[in-house]
Length: 295
Ligand SMILES: [Zn+2]
Picture 1 (cartoon, helix red, strand yellow):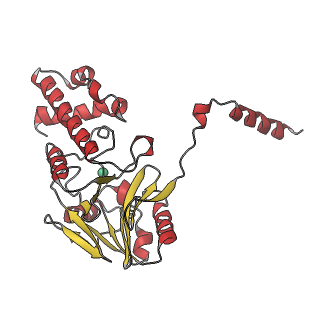
Picture 2: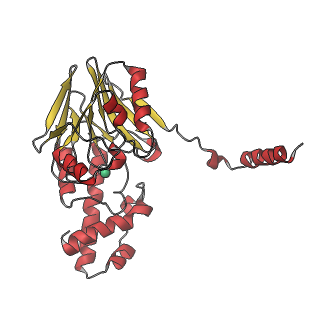
Picture 3: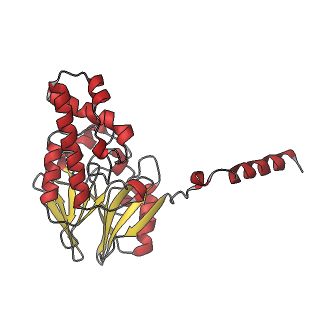
């Protein structure tokens, strides 16, 4: 037996000896999943990002290409083509962040029309990322809607929240909304809540709770790969924000420093949320700026 084969066998044995927990199956890198009970609403997931798409007899409405530094759009189109050969008419951007909207060129090459909020387009023009397809049409603050093949998709602007250019997408017949990056499923807010407007985001959450919908598709799966949420998730997100805000305000009022606030604030009610250990300090810092400096 040659040395390399011996080494290989040793490697195989070492892998076999790993504890079961280390061998948990990894999900495939991408998937398209039909939303139960709908005619043609799907979730395309690529690693830890997801986007909604709607298949109608007259064509497809896609959203975020989620192709920053990875070939997600090609996989996205291939998944659509397994379902329908109808033209992909639209790509709607949820907001301006590159991890959700870069890499859309394969859709553009197929003739899709790109749509975004007007502030998204302004930001993209300023930032000039060559990998982001520029929107062809913009929606202003009054919002808009796409009607295609018997499906209506509302494009709603609720003001500033996560950035100043989020489009909340709602399928009124299916009572489904697609909202990206500020309504996590059983999770905290992300890191230092970059680009979060306070208290505007809290206001948007309240408006979304008051809207008519049953199911939420977020821009990232939640813990355990959960892909769809509901109003209880949004209520929990809002409660977390408001409880965190009150706790940080108290620390600021007491004259505590950033470091002291981060050291002292614990929210045991929310310990089970994904990201609690990693993100709480950053989330505190964001609210500290708000209460201390009005930022
Ligand atoms: Zn974002």
